[in-house]
Length: 279
Image (tube, rainbow, N blue to C red; front, side, top):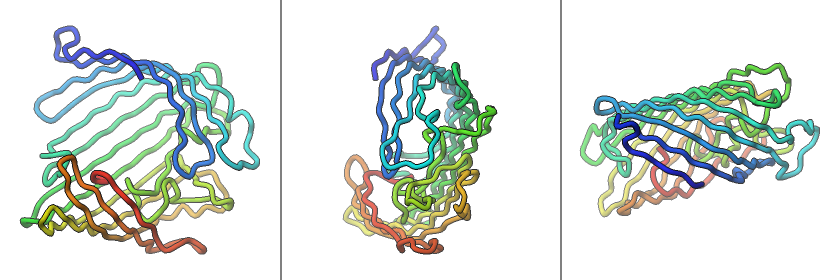
């Protein structure tokens, strides 16, 4: 990625960025990847003390490609797509520290309008929200909460929908105890994405002294509108604990998540290694 940035655009305290980018992305455990080439123009401005508003404008060439064994997939999915995107967003944050938060509220919301210039695969609006809350009821104890919601409003008339635009859950950042992106899997063992995601976490962080802390957590999540037969779109719950060590740049830790309601044949849980807080 290359770009330029102006911290005082038009002398209005607006941060403006223009960048061009090229990337190749293969998320863990997924049987597809994406190549992206594009440009982005964004503007954002702080209002009051805690509020930030902004918008980004993208022109992107995107191609989904096969990265594993795939059966019965329409070849149209792998065509190159030319996409225009407009994404307004807002962020409200009173969090005292992003390295080791102990109090405050964080909220982010965005709505990204996607228009497929030459085809009909990427015509949708993707809504995303995330909220976090931290407070310290006792010395040495921090309670942390996270909630996420995402929804894709499909505006196209094509039954196909690109996998690289769907929501996926599972792993260290949302529902611990599952493999990355493996909250739901199909009959072949491949991750399943959906057009709606809901996830939440509660975590108690107990300070042991000497820069060590023990987290105790409950995670939950579900995907809806997967379009895959045989996938039970129920909420899945996990509990777990572990150990973290605080460094000057944030914690490193080992966690274990235990599945409370696994599907038949699923393992009981999973270990995770984390750098920084998961939320």
